[in-house]
Image (cartoon, rainbow, N blue to C red; front, side):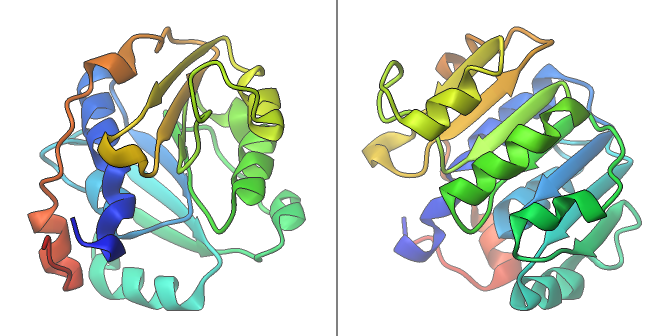
Amino acid sequence: MHKKWRHGTHVPVLRYISKKVLCKTVIEFGAGAFSTSTFLDDCYFKDLLSLNSYESSGDWIALLNRHFSKDKRFYLHKISKKAKELKKHKYNDADILFVDGPSLEHRIFVLKRLRHLAPICILHDAAPKKPNSKDSKLNKLIKLFKYKSFFYPPRNISPTSILSNYIDVSSWASEIVWDSDYKNILAVFGGNNA
């Protein structure tokens, strides 16, 4: 997989979850080529009514508007890069809260404060290095959830955490089949799967 596109490792997780739960609403922090495309893909999230994406990068906002602005389910909100300014926005409940972003500290901050909005929370690019390791800030966050599952893709790149206080997701990561078929996503964004 091309290094530029290695962060698409959460696509199999999202596709798997789309088959496990009825999902009508998603809140996405850190919109991107892979997550946004997957949530708006009718092959997976066929019942989706709204995707509220929050993004701080002007470049990403321009790119996402160019590709998704005609989709009536897609709502893109510009936010500050300062995580502490999250309180300025009003958020509705959702079926899934997806969190990605510029740094692990930022993702932890967002998820810790907004985890109550959705029964399933997905934290991209973050999981304990080993299932029972002691990554302090991350482990403190994970302990806030009753159920947890960690998907580690091949070659130790970009793990994804699935967290919930309402749905037993404990076995989910072990049921996810690794799939690096991003051709349809990459074609839209001009990438290659070399």
